[in-house]
Image 1 (cartoon, rainbow, N blue to C red):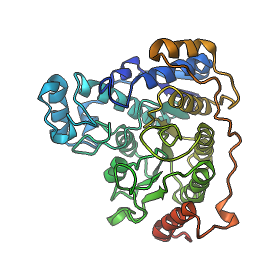
Image 2 (tube, rainbow, N blue to C red; image 1 turned 180 degrees about the vertical axis):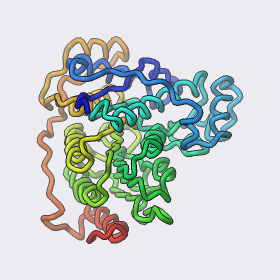
Image 3 (cartoon, rainbow, N blue to C red; image 1 turned 90 degrees about the vertical axis):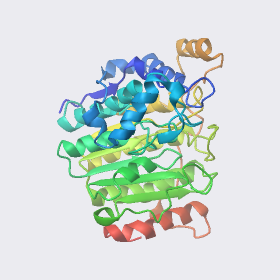
Image 4 (cartoon, one colour; image 1 turned 90 degrees about the horizontal axis):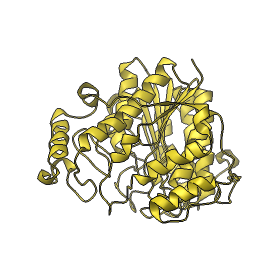
Length: 390
C-alpha cells in the first residue's frame, strides 16, 4: 500500500448544477477545491481524475430504464415531466445531467478501487455522497447514488464486509435501500429525526431484512441537537458496531448540513464538531478497517461559510496534514470568495468551539435526555441482532 492519500477531482464536476435558485450551488465544490489548494494540501495528496462511471458500473445499483431516462432528459431537459424523479423541484433536469452525474459517480468508484487495491490508503471525493438516489429514481438533489456504486464496486472486487457511516443531517436512505438485505454491508446513519426532516425515513426500527437483518442502523436525533449530543451519539453507536463487524473498508459520508447555519435543516452542530467526527472516522478506519478509508461529501447548503471549511478539514485529515482549527484562512481564498459570490468569507477554520467536549456513553445515560433516548432506541433495536448488549 502506498500510504498516500488521493483526492478525486475533475473540475467538470462543478457542472452538476440544478440552476441559480437551487440550494445545491456547485460553487461549494469550487471553493472547497480552492481552499484545499490555499492550505497547500495539494503537496500532500495525489490528485486523480477518474473516468465517468460506465453503463455496466451504473447498473450495479441502478435500473436500466432509469439510466435511459436520465440520458433522455440530459439530452432534452425540456422533456422532463417528473417521472423517475427527474424534472422536479428537488431535481430539475439540465443539459448534460447524465454525463456529470456519471462523472461524480466515477470519482467515488475510483476512490473505492484505489483504496481496495492499495494504490492509496485513503481517498476523498467531496463532490460525492449523493446518498438519496434510488435504483429506479432521483431524489433529494441526487441523480446517481455514487455511494452505493462505490460500495457495490468494492463487493464486486471481493470485499466481504464494508461498513458505511453517514453523518449527513438527512437519512442515508438510498444507500440503506440498496443493501437492505445484504449482510456484507453495514449501513449506519446519524441524522435529524424523520418527523422533522426529509426523507422522513431512518427510524431506529429500520434494521434491514432477510439475511441483512441487523445490518441497517439508524440514529434519529431530535431537532436542535448540538455538538455535545451529536458527538456523544456517534461514539455511543459507531465504534462498538465497527468492532463487532470488522469491516475491510470504511466508507463515510460527511454532509456538512448538520451545521447550525445550514438553511435546510435543524441541528445545531459546529464546524469543530464536524471536524471531531472526521478525526474519529479516520481513527476508526485505522483501528477496524486496516486504514482503508473512502471519505465522501454530501449535503451542505451554507456554501461559503461552512462547506469549504468542513471538507478542507476532511481532506487535510485524510492527507495526514490536518488543518489546525485556529488556522487563519489565506487572504487569497477570501478574495476568490468575494469575486465569485460577493460574500465575505470566514477568517478562521473554526467556529470557536474547539476542543469539543462530550460525555462518553460508558459514563451512564440520562433517561430524560432526548439525545440519550434516541441513542438508546437505536441500541435496543439493532444491538441484540448483532449479539451486542443494548
